[in-house]
Image 1: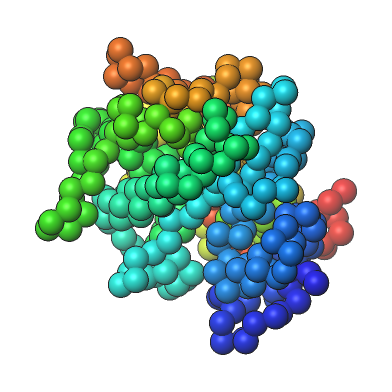
Image 2: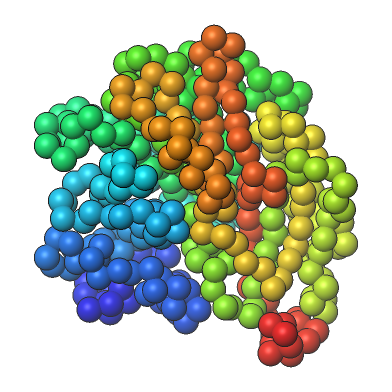
Length: 381
């Protein structure tokens, strides 16, 4: 049984699964990710069914497994929960995966038409903070009510790995929503300045607390692993697809690079040499990039493009964690391309180790052969 051998009624198939199923390049990557030990750990086809019907939660788990493999961790899949028990430098850690999905009355992330429509950035961030909060609490409660009592969990760092898939434009927020949730910093649109906030109104009766890592209440959570780019776009970026062009916004810690590069393969460019579409995004979202001394992020359209599996991935460290992630482990994460975000309790500010050129946002466009100047084989020489 493979991931793309359909075992459910076609009416139950997730739209993202159907799109991937039609693309042999994406199928090749995902099938390579599908380790038998992982997808059959429950002894039946539960994982395959979830991949075909809910998709994003299974994709995120497949992705996290690949990250741990890059870190050369020893992964123990004997126990069904948490999702990953792994060993690194003779230390044992735990990862529980969860995705932030759309609310029942909201537009799902796979609605492409809504993804192309303009949306107010404050509304996007607001919705993402609420959905990330729900995802965090679900796994925090799971640890408190169940996992903490298991012998193989006691006294080990517990990391919640969260990916946002809650709305069509979820990828546009960069790190803004997760910073707001964990550290309480809110970006003031227009000025790019930040203010500390203690809560967010979920509805007329419920105020959700913010700054979860600024209190001892969540000491059982050692950190949050987060990425807004561990998507099908990541799969496409790691594939050998010759038809794709990639728009990127990246951290620009050095200012001696040209800010814009465009795809020279396009015969009939829909995007001019200044990449107006991406520039418009940056102007709209520029406040979220200033925190890490990035006044002007790097903007590029590129082909012959590859990403590292950890590109765009960040670990947010809880300063009040009961079971702390050691500095040696944090260094290994960072050395493998993962941004490390810690918090200085005394100064009330986050301290970030961010990789230069680390991915903030990505847009993938599949070109028609008629719009490409050169033959496909030449692209890879």
